[in-house]
Image 1: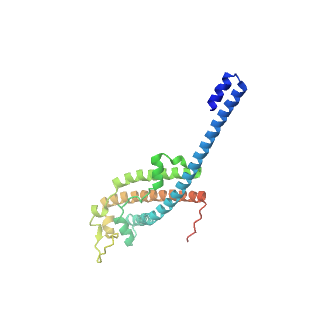
Image 2: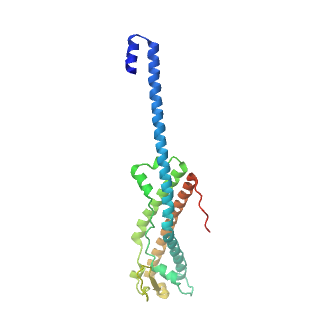
Image 3: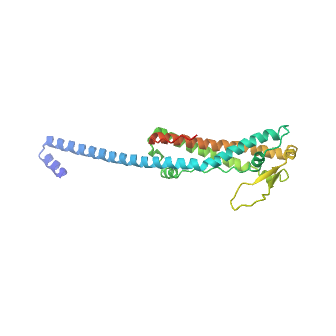
Length: 246
């Protein structure tokens, strides 16, 4: 209809009317594009909010999932630190049970799970830029970089770690339990401190494990810190307040 009217105005050489028709067309297109942009922005904001809530819950759940294993990793690292001072020193005390067990389990350096379902979806669809909040986007990128570095570090650690109880069975012996349970549990070890001190081969292998485990615990801690930072900024964006625990 508008096209026919414009044609009639051109034929009649009514240039004023033609100009008005042109303005109407331009304004109509502009308004239509604005409405479309507004609708798309509303959809984007709704999607962003959905993913923000999902990401918050997944981060909190992942922190809880990692908590026990992360604590174990740091405890083993601390036990190895004190064991190292004893093995390479001249203190006459004996290795504690925890220090001995940490030596036996020093080859276990699997990374605690670090994946987030929402983040996997967003990365696969190229939708990470969905988040318009710069703080959220910055913490997400930092977490991804920290996680990638931890995974790369783990690849090097796993290639050089040594099962000391297998390489040195006379110095690190598996302690046979007297009571058996259907529930899987960590084993315990008996350690020969004097033999360890007098075996250069063991000392070399132990130093490799102790150093690698320190790097492993550091990487676990950095990923935990990345999750904590992300959780905190999501709390601010979503106006979520958690009860403080002692």
